[in-house]
Structure formats: C-alpha cells, structure tokens
Image (cartoon, rainbow, N blue to C red; front, side, top):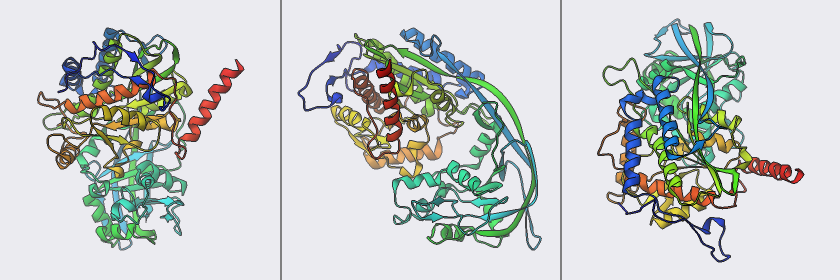
Length: 562
C-alpha cells in the first residue's frame, strides 16, 4: 500500500496560472495511510457484524446503527447536522400483501392453480386493502414499453382498460442484444419496473403481472430473494394521504409458473420473448382470465437519517454532501441456517466510507471554507426513501448544495487501474474525478454495465432529480495484479452469489486496497469543492441542467433583493 499520512500533511492553497478552472487551483492532501485503512476496516467489521442484525430500518439493528453513527460523529467532533440534532426523523409506511385462491382459466376451461409465496407474489395498491377478482381479462403487452423517442409502442391498438397486463422484465433492446433496437443509453429507463408500471396505469390497466426471468433481468434473480423482500412488505414515506392509484394490483410470477401460464394460453414463452423484442410486435388478448383474493396489512414506523456537519469558515451556507445508505435487509425468519443479511459490501462499505472521510476532514489543520455534510440515509433498500425525504425537507437549501458524492456498495478486488463513474459525461464533476485519479496513475472508465441503470437506482439520483450535481463511483475492476477479465469475473461472481444474500459478510482477508484508492479520489473531489468558490453544473444538454439553472437563478434573485 502507498504510504500516506492523512493527519500530518499541511493544508495548502496554491495559485496556478490563469489556464485553469477552479478545480485545478487547490492542492489536496493524501489521506489513505495504514492508520486510515485500519479505522475503515474496524467500522466495516463492526457495522456488518451479527450484533447489528443486518441494519434494517425500523428494527433494533437499525436503531443500533444510527447510534453507532451518532457516537462516531460525536467522537470526531462533528456538529449535529440537523439544527442541533444528529437525526432527521423519517416516518415510513409498510404494506404486506398476501394472496389466496389464485387461479388462471383458459377458454377451454383448463385451470392453473397458483400458490402464494412459492409461485406468485402480490402487491395490493390503492385505497382498498382487500381486492377480490373473478375472471379478470389478461393482455400480453410484451415488454410494456411506450416511447415516442424510440417509436416503440406496446400499447398501440390494444384496449387494456380495467384489465391485467402481462409483461416481461427489462426492455426490448436489452433482450434482443441487437444494437439497432432502442440503441441509445437512455433506453435503459424503458426497462425500469416503475416506468413500466406507470405506463400500464396511464393506459387504464387494473393490474400488472411481471414474469421473473433472471436472463432478461441481466442477473441471477432468485425467487427466494423476492419472496423474502415481499414478506417484509412494500415501504413508502408516510404522508397521511389516501393512495389514489387507479392501478390496483401488481403481481410477480416465478419463471416456471410463468411458462405454464403462457402454455395455458396456447403460447411458448421463449417464442413470445423473441416476438416481443422484434420491431413491429403487437400486443394481444391472452384469452385467459385470472381470479383470486388479495389482502394488504399496514403499519407506520419511524426511522432516521443521520447527519454530521463540518461547518465552513467562509461560506458556511454552501455545502458539499457525502452520503451513503446505512440500512440493509435485516434478518429473514424463513432462513434455514444463517438468517442475518450482514451487508458487508452493501452497504457497510459506504457507511464506513462517510465515517472515514469525516475523520480525514477533521484531521486537517485548517477547516474547509464551505460546510461539509456527512449523511447516512435510512430506507434506501426499500425505495430510496430516506434520501427522498431529505430532498423534500433539506437542512441546507438545495440551491446552496454544491454537489453530492454518494457511496453505495464497494467491492474487494484490491488496487485497480481504473475507477468507474456511473452516469459519466453528465456533469462537471467528471473533471474533478479525472484530476484526482490521474494523481494515482489511474483512469476513469465508463460504466461496463449500462443495462443495469446504476445511475438511477441509488440515493444520488434523488438529488439529481432536484438539480443537485450528483456523483456515484465504483471502485474499479481492472485489477493491477490480475487484470480486467479477472476483475469482471469477481464482480459478476459477487452479484450472482452474494449480492443481497446472507453470504455478503465481513472477513479478515477482504482486500481493502482498492477502496483506499477510491476514498482518496472522492476525498480529493470533495476537498477541492469545499475550498473552491465554484458551483459545478450539469452539461448543457443534460436533462437535469434546467432544474439546476433555475434553482441557482432563484438564489441569486434572493441575494440581490435582500
């Protein structure tokens, strides 16, 4: 490991020639020495231990995690980040759905009985907590896409009003592996479940059925994992409002029964997949009906975001934000042996990161000019809920939030030649990261897994939607010792075998050297921003640029009228 001592290097500001932007005008101390790595390892080991019971929001393990973060911030000397408190209360709403008597019948009277938990997982939506259906009509809509941009309209010439639509996972471009089909980086959004569900609702559907096909998802989605999550319930922010959804029912079928379901309708599943991703596909009535009773139980509970603050010396109202979600999947009562989802990689790595970064900034002899907020979010795993609550109730106005750097699930591949920026090419933040990695003899590369939509499925995306320039990076896969192919295999093996599973555990032989590289880079980015007067922005053609421009105009207007 490179020898760097984070507490002994003096803060320096140097003035370069006028060739540079603000991000080139600051010399950043190095921070990742052996003492730093030992502190990081201790946090990682502690947070992913059985004592924390998987860190699920709304559980004793979740409460213990919040206490650990508070005590860590206090011991470092960070101020409470929420107007005198380290906590921001988040009220959450949990709904658990069950099913009984579910059966599908074709026009000839052939019947397929479908069992709850082992074959079907329901989600009851809307005001009613009990939904009984008898012979509800079904329509196959392929991948359920509807996009003017890509001229892809699975709902053309088909009436789904009051019916249940049956759809496939992901989108036609991914399934076909054909670069001429939906060939654009933004097409990945067509495959997001929430986009497909919203599309079905907009066309008047009563409900949806999704067939859980891991090949179409691009990962090994196991039914047991989905059943586990379903048993914990669907969560949302509680606002006291009645759910006004017109779509009443979301159902998920395992692949085996999904194939039987299609066979009941007289179709071969694999052939339907090919037809659905072929240009010109037309949706059609399945000539199968569905009956059953579906119920929902509800509860309201409280969890918290945890916030620690280093107050800026010159522009304390302007804030650079480091974030990670502290929550995990908790425990699963149905497990035969190990029941604790320790979540070492996801996301004890991120939670330990914000603690280590806070220590590094507190160790500097001169405080930053801008404030730095370190924030651990609750309920990311149940829908980015902690971050959604924060952006709707920000401690610092979002127009004064300089940038957000989010850490979510690092891996243990050792030192690499690369770092990955999810959503590269969207904002000025790329320049800060490129400068930082160059110091370490590394490079930035694009996301190797664009079909997974990594920029859109973690807490930074919530801030992006509000216009705040937001960065999420992965700690690299091109191993300095073993090469790119080896690193890609390690990543794939983790996703297939350990991601969101009880096997995501801490061990003493985990290689943290690559994470130390990563932390040096994101420290560099945040340090530079915290001692600069520059506000980074989205690129001119980015979808979030108009939002940011409007918010910055608003604060300028406020300041000029005071």
